[in-house]
Length: 494
Ligand SMILES: Cc1cc2nc3c(=O)[nH]c(=O)nc-3n(C[C@H](O)[C@H](O)[C@H](O)COP(=O)(O)OP(=O)(O)OC[C@H]3O[C@@H](n4cnc5c(N)ncnc54)[C@H](O)[C@@H]3O)c2cc1C
Image (cartoon, rainbow, N blue to C red; front, side, top):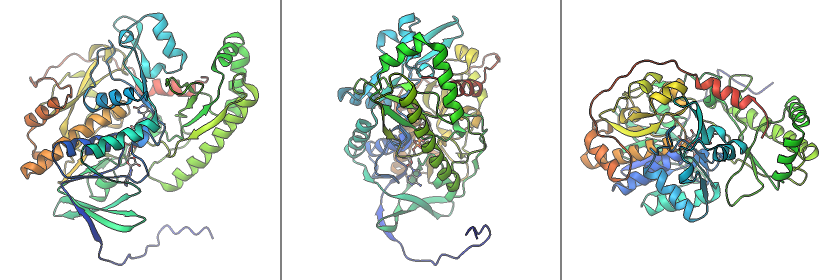
């Protein structure tokens, strides 16, 4: 007997649950979207609680060891991301917790600057082909130390006046009519409830909007980056100079070794970590297409992937140490405390962002963020930025709820390029600000005045253009980002 019972159910008895807090804004999930939501809601005057299932905040940016903050500038090197992301990077910089493209290199096509990032294998994050000139250009991107980041985020959330509750899983919602009014959460203290006037779902996976019965889209093409679950891990004490010399002097031998590693089931590609405070360390992001469909919402699959990924990490480590010069004295410094998940369920919001939006140059009346559009070849060259409307964070059919982070309302074709860390921080900053405004005005989040929201975000240092109606331009041939990722993560070598 396998113990599996697909059909069998059991009735859970009803019981009284202790209300732990009654607040204005409850944020569930402490990743980039959730942290930014909590900080912004609290700074905007709302009594705010942030709950997070793990013992730290930062989500994938800390626990997932996904520590690259890319696309701060467009293809020309012009910066577009400001607001909380920039505040955070400045704070980390003071603590030696970040490295980033030098100001003079942003937008540069100089070979030395381009080669530096290509050599670290950070090409996708730091360098793009500029289709206007046919040259490779350095973008503005950063890398961060996850441990310093965890501590800094705690300081920012608590410093903003929000209350933080770790080790707490948001499980179910408390509904009144069609509005979410609170959440049940589970922890070592048992099952408790928090009541709030606005709930922000920042779980990344949409746990809260699913519980609320909101309409959602879970289409996720297995070829897309967002469908690839991954366990990131780091190797340290690597003699990178020795490795570089070997690779340069014996390229054929190197290629042979990498092919052998692939055959054994190891991970062929790593980034040379470029954090100033962590020399001799390499990062295995392990984002590789999975042979079968992977579902981040299926606990059996999550378990399987964690077990397999650990096996593959050890195969890689043993191989590199034994055969690749420079790795003889290396050791595994850390595997990510949490499995990398990035795709899955997305809310159906009042507006659904699609690929078409990249070509319209539309400045929406409710624009809450301007993001660099760097990954679509000719389209990116012609349309270097994309505006995001607030309506992408507002569920179409459920009240009392906003969605911050990667589960924003979007087609999967565009979600994969506009769900990264600085983007999710921008969505969170807008959601937290809007939630506080809704509470203050005693209205539903969907009724928040767009003009006032934009003005409040601008006051917080967010880059938002003046609203001036629509602008359309001609259609262009699209270079598919999925092909780009596919190529990038199936090719080998560090
Ligand atoms: C392998 C990999 C590599 C990546 N590389 C990069 C990169 O280099 N740069 C980049 O910018 N982006 C990268 N991404 C994408 C990026 O990490 C995510 O899109 C981004 O972190 C999403 O932010 P988020 O806040 O929406 O969700 P998450 O970062 O997933 O955070 C969600 C948070 O909610 C918590 N949570 C979930 N459910 C519950 C619940 N029910 N109750 C309480 N808490 C809950 C989680 O523990 C987590 O802290 C990568 C992703 C992966 C998987």
